[in-house]
Image (cartoon, rainbow, N blue to C red; front, side, top):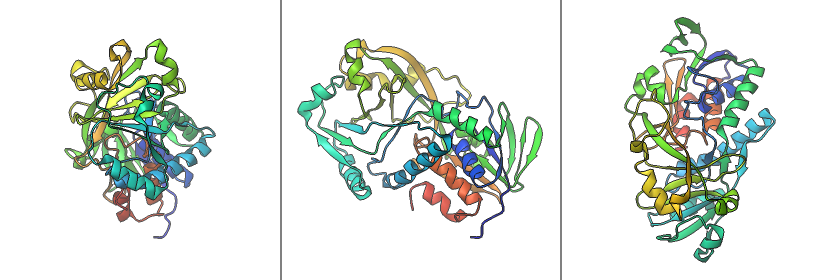
Length: 372
């Protein structure tokens, strides 16, 4: 495909998807105007968090496993542009409390990718992981190629970098209408025209792109931030990323590293809620998390709760990352099921590459879903 002349792109959404699309477009010489309904970065955005997991191990979701080397490379390009790194390699330990085939599928994909993994002796549990409840653990699997990204730091650094590079920032701008055929939008009653429009509005995207309604469903998710008992603080300060897999779902656990708090959440999607609601988790939000916490942590009642928080993902039935062409000049980006942040830099740059004519339009959606 012949390369298009650089033009002017309008990007809706200042989370990781929108900022990454703006980054990719600006690197290719495009003018970019970015619209965000709140502050930049926005504390209500799905992307706004202390830390997030990134990894290569994906069980049967082999498409995402194949994307992860590209995702890590995209983050490296971003660190180079930022002049600073916001990734900590910790490795990941998977605590397997039942056999659902995850291990065999993961072993195959990690072997194909050349990522190291190994079983840990269960008799090391008390010394290496003194905070874990041992009941029901069948297997401990340690994997390389995993660690933590630090979203608030990343988003803040990206906003500052993009502003320096000439991206026009429109914080507190409410976009009410998007025309992907004509390449224009309306924000706060004013019409803005461009050559391309990218809608990356997270849990609000279906309000601007009716075709996403009922497909990428906003899902209210709860997380807890905890302070461990004093005698376990040192062990937690050295902990890897942990994913406890039980028959009921289990937990993902991010340790308190680089000045963050201990965070836990689960992988069950509520598929409910209004993205305009507040971000304080209710007891309804947390009803699954409490029993899982008590099964996973030794002496769970001794942990102090620091914050009960709710955030929003968009979720599809098959957990696919959605990229949809809209008319002649538009794209909708909908990060799905918690995969959004770890793949954000890669997907945003992929959208930019397509708009700039570097990759065919009809191949982008399947690539972003891990199908190619």
